[in-house]
Length: 268
Ligand SMILES: Nc1ncnc2c1ncn2[C@@H]1O[C@H](COP(=O)(O)OP(=O)(O)O)[C@@H](O)[C@H]1O
Ligand SMILES: [Mg+2]
Image (cartoon, rainbow, N blue to C red; front, side):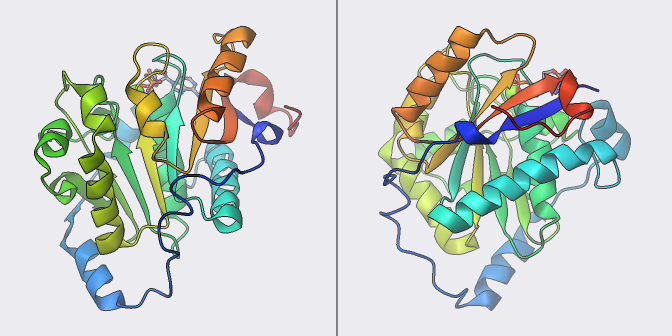
């Protein structure tokens, strides 16, 4: 399988992001019992290994998962260095492997037991996480965002430190839902209850609609996913400039990059 290559030096010097400095810094996990109980209350995710393998979701034993371990290490480093917690995963267009990458990254983070991570399917136009994870239960994340309903009903727990917030219903008013101030309040509430170290957001493609643009102002950074043999250079520059005008750029990932399998080059 073609794999991915992280252009680390494309990540920019951090700017005072709107969220990183607005939220109070987390002190010690003061009430571990309450937080642990909140996690324990979540429904447990059960996945069929064959479905995961067919959808390119890699287990720790698979050597190819190392690329995602690298990416995890990079994000954890940025988290510790700058306090970045909310990371959007964006791409110029659909079909570049953004959701596949996000799920693999989330599983890599779940193996880091001291960290808590929540991954949200905020590609409300073309939700994909539940399908890739082989989940059949119905979830309408857009309806919850629109009615200020707590989001944890859509969260399924992987182990005790990772959760996926799933969606199976396409939302018509996706941009409006993601741009609502109440969406920010719902996320803050999740942070108070579950104390995640990282929250990852699968976003709609940026060239297709403006859904991601407004939401990017509420995250600490964005990771840009491109397809190595498909995304033209001018599009990479355009998206990078757009993202950088809205939030910090955590890095650019070239997915399906043939040379990354044979080389350790990181020469963005
Ligand atoms: N590294 C990869 N190598 C080969 N195929 C991939 C890779 N990553 C994703 N794919 C495939 O590309 C297709 C689109 O992936 P998906 O994650 O749904 O993209 P997006 O979320 O960007 O629309 C899927 O069939 C997926 O299995
Ligand atoms: Mg997708």
